[in-house]
Length: 304
Image 1 (cartoon, helix red, strand yellow):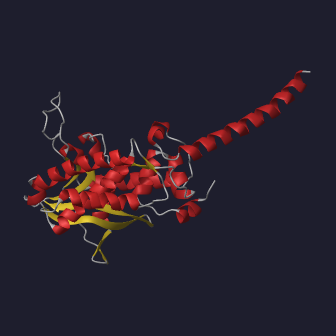
Image 2 (cartoon, one colour):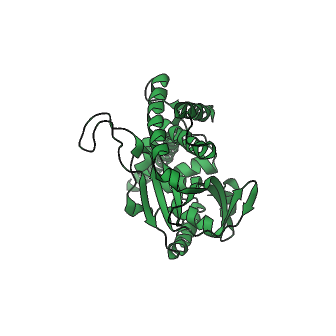
């Protein structure tokens, strides 16, 4: 067992470390405490990172860019990162890259053609933040903060996963709540300087990027050539929810520092740490067998 101070010295409290702990405490321990590399990188994560780079660049340099070239460059850059970790290809690499480029281009075309992405005022894009919670510094990156045409402030998290998030889950979404808390009580990095802006957002939103993908055939949910839906999923953000979130966050960090490294078997299907997890289970089983082998002769002696 690690002591609390030792665990905190080994990790940086970021939104990604908290996300990993909530997904699976054992996987969090492998990645952030023991500093093990995952056994592979997923195409979904690579695709998501490339899309984030592209959308950030679109807002920096304008909406009239060659989107196919933009995505190709972002994908190449993302593929080069962490090159020592193999990629989990579903097909041949060239075929998978071609599929990613097709989906990426569809998403980017839908994004640049969406009216709200032109009418809203972008205040921050991919902005770093830091915020203290009971003496502990948490850091991370916020995808977007916008001022809408009606003057309201909106915090946006770009999502490229397969599953469209449910609206009722947004109020309890710890990541969006952390971003809102950081804007209100923390600092953001602007032009190399940390600024305390005390911004209170009016709503938090998920921008579901896959809604811009195109149906390839007529079906139950849409016609061939149409987009798969609307990307916006939003909820209002009253101030009292931030106070409630702070207590929940403290509870999470408290559990993280207790080194409760138990597996969440619901996440095993897509986990890139199955090898050390299997090794740990085999070692645990070996210890149990040794203990049983030690006890069985002792019980036989007692019966004699």
